[in-house]
Amino acid sequence: MQPDPTQREAKHSCGLFGIFGHQNAAVLTQMGLFAQQHRGQESAGACTTDGTTIKRVTGLGLVNDVLNRAAIESLANPVGIGHVRYSTTGGTCSENAQPLMFSYAGGQVAIAHNGNLINAALLRRQYEDHGHIFQTSSDTEVIIQLLAKPSHQAKSNPLVHVLNHLQGAYSLLLLFPDRMIAVRDPLGFRPLCLGRMGNGAMVVASETCALDIVDATYVRDIERGEILTITRDGMDSKRFGGEGNGRGAACIFEQIYFADPSSNIFGENVHLVRERMGRALAREAPVEADLVVPIPNCARCAAIGYSHESGQPLGRGFTTSHYAGRSFIMPDAASRAEAVKFKLRVIRDVVRGKRLIVVEDSVVRGTTTRGKIGALREAGATEIHLRVASPPIRHGCYFGIDFPDESKLVATNRSLEEIAKFLEVDSLHYLSVDGMLGCVKMPRDQYCTACFTGDYAVEVREPFDKFALERRQLRMFT
Image (cartoon, rainbow, N blue to C red; front, top):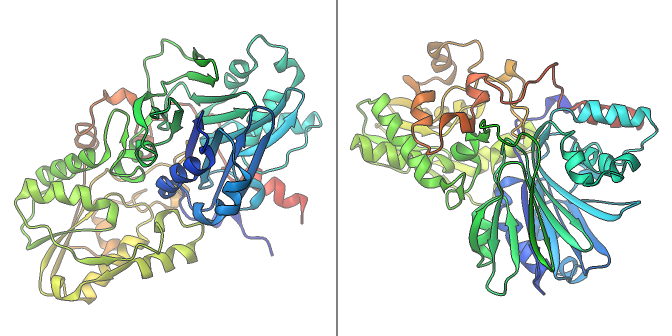
């Protein structure tokens, strides 16, 4: 029996890494992906080239399992791109593992994508109606189908023409035998940065933590609407789509939850942003208590800020297993529940008899948070005051962080009091939108806050079904 793709849990985006001009490109790609494993745990892969032929290794699982020693040896080349995947369109199957690789009239090409194309289903339907055959249920393949179209190949710059067909969020790495190309969409939804190694090799990654692990120096972010081509002759930058449009859409949820605290994204350090959000939360919602307790791990930065601003001591109410994975991005409900169970254990002697301020980074469906609160109650906490270092999530995301539909979000159509009752806490406060945006340095019109405000930078003109491509594929095999 095939799984129902609509029943999957909330998901996240992916991680990219590319390197040009290093004899150990395959090893460094594996390291760069390992540093970004938090961005995706479903599949991993890499493609490399010697200037003539592209090689590919992909598979389901973690980076170190897929890109093992034998895989790295088979990929020994000076140029490569890699990907860790968390599916936002298309299911968890080996066919969807990236980088995807194809051969067409223009030769070989490999592609790795972080984001979500909101017009992928429409484009795919149009191309299938004209006889195109798709090998995956990933929206990423649509890009290659567009690139391979003969009339697009006849354009003076085929890639620019193709990118101007796309709607939504996309940070891309494309690998051709003779070049590596980095692309960031005109609104800049997802982070993408450029670094340089001591030998002159150029590195592109979703987060700067990947630059750090390979000892690359940060150069700059790939800019919104930029196509950066790297060859043996150097680098060439071109612009496309929306030039001169001042609106940006950097995903604020990257700062709240997804990116690694050691990374600098959108021009500032993630840990420091989260700490400022915790401070702002303490100013907005003070409460008398004995201890400030962060849950889960990624709320630790905000809890530090809350503790410093409020003057109340920071405590450790949970011990954390480093082997259970990130529960928020587990591929199904059962895996997510098991991950939470094994990941967090209450330190009973710390919380027993205490009034707790529990700091969360975000609350999506609420069931996981309620389980954590219940564990603290069972351990003897006398009061629990939940403070969330982001606003209520009331709207779906269509741009690469795959929240469930709005009916499954705990904050949709519920008052603050109703949410507090559902979560079984004594008091509840979310950071305000103004408070959140006051903690980041870019102007507010440079961020996407649609999951909180419903203000979408790209108009979604018809109801969007993230799983339409997968359903089409399932029907083919049932």
